[in-house]
Figure (cartoon, rainbow, N blue to C red):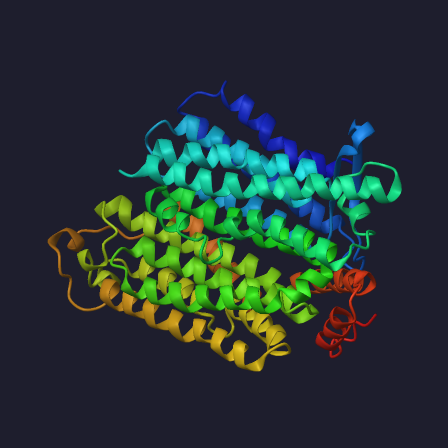
Length: 509
């Protein structure tokens, strides 16, 4: 078990290289097998994970450039564990549902490379190694959108790359400066995040560094007003690209806020609660209204993702156990639900070669299995109780309610607005008369599609009813995070705010 994290990271990398030797006829089966093995390894990690231990586990360190404190360091805690499992699971499911016919071998090899970078982001504890995985993830996604996307795929791919790359450069400057500060403070270079957690930084420096990291994380989320690349990327990406983008890549930004911004810059995080809340609330309300105006089914779900990511940001900057744990759980639920919704849109697009809502009607009569699964995922997206979407949204809003009941109530509009645009889309597409002759002969879900979608339905229901196996280890690690923030605050305002927000949870300085 000493090397399980490195195996998790690099197994897809080696599987991708072996994929070049696999025949075109066997490549899809090979890709599914490789991602299934990766998923099993992540489950083995969970089985051996000590859920009562809030600290980093399975730590591994290899010296890379020790003179400047740059080393390969990986570890996992309750915050990152389930993000890794979701990454391996959604990658496997997306390959099971894969329907692409063009250059399938290249696509599957690209997805395997992408899986390596995503897992690496969630496990890296050295800032430079984290940054390398972060940036490397852009390359395969750029290729997936640009090579297998729609008519505007080149524009969408370049816009996605430039937005995220430029924001990440600002973040890199912040990382290098923080490494220099550590050197000035201790006399040794280190880019180890756990070492950085020991630094006590003055407020002005915290705020400056918070904004530098914000540039990288906010664009990746994406937060308003940096969200404009996402609808293009989703709209032009092939189904597998949209599934992985929504399920995993967006979560890298919110994970960055939890892993870096909160523990490293606690005073700045407290200071930025209101600005971050305002940006999140704008995203929640504005993009929900934009989603309602869309005529493309895929664009509705794309803008819905921006709205739900706003709720995650609110949960994170509630700065209490309920909010942060709820935000992490919502990352998982949004990954599963949005990934499934994009997969379902891909199913109907393969049959009709259109995503326009007005092209459909009466699908519930023609495709009852499809309509049923779509309805379940739609309800989970809205946040219906007893579905996975409700747990994360409720805890995120509950956590932020401690900071501002008024703003939390406004954020709660995401449930009402989400119900409006989702149910309107569902009514137009699935009920009424069959409006197009092409729709009368549509085939319902086949065995391959059911194999991919039924596990997602099961997760939506089971984790909606019983989220405890995930919430317990997440809560333990989040409580540890709050303790680090309490211990590092340098302003009395931040000390009182964090303690006050967590008084009900019993997490005090």
